[in-house]
Amino acid sequence: MITQRLRQHLQSGVIEHIRRHPSWYPISPNLLTFGALLLAVPACWSISEQRYLLAVLFILQSGAVDLVDGCVARGLDKTSKFGSYWDAMIDRYVDCLLYLGFVLDGHELAGFLATTGTVLTSYAKPRTAMVVAIYAQDWPTIGERAERFVLLLAGLLLATWVPTISGWSTISLMLWVTALMTHIGAVQRVLMTRRLVQQQEADRR
Image (cartoon, rainbow, N blue to C red; front, side, top):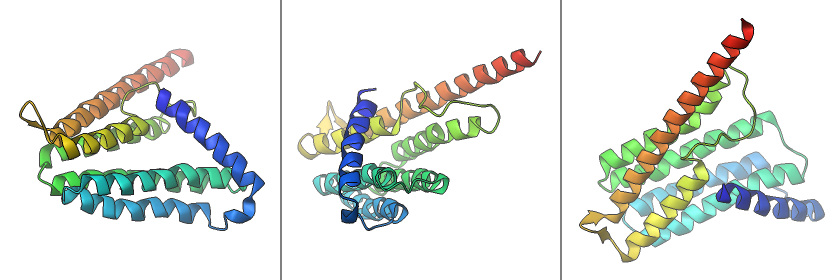
């Protein structure tokens, strides 16, 4: 995916910079990860108050922290299994907080479905790992976090200047697209898990 390749390109540059200047990064990677959650709180409030440009600012800052924390861990050779787990958990909290803002803004159903789709898509892969061996790389399904992130920002920016499209709320449209995309992605992962389990069972015969 384009978003994944761009992220990897940015991360490689940041990691190299950190390795050249380790003294510039005295903060713990896990503490830095928590900063993404703190920034999601005012982002949630800004969304609920329909201050979408301000929300975009906080979301971008939260996303930047999410990008940098792993780079700091790798650049300082402080990667750990708990750090990976902690990062994933904070990501889920950030996602839920952002969509909570839309629920508080009056988009209850669309916000709820976008939230559940996001959580289920994220949960599907680690749950699969509990029943069958899987590879570490991302699965080729829609609804990845980077895609949701881009769609969220695009929806907020567009809603700032074009609040409605053909009589539909721009925010509502963005949420319904997110809900559809993530639930399709969750179903894709269920089907992939079913295929992997069937393949494993066939190999044992």
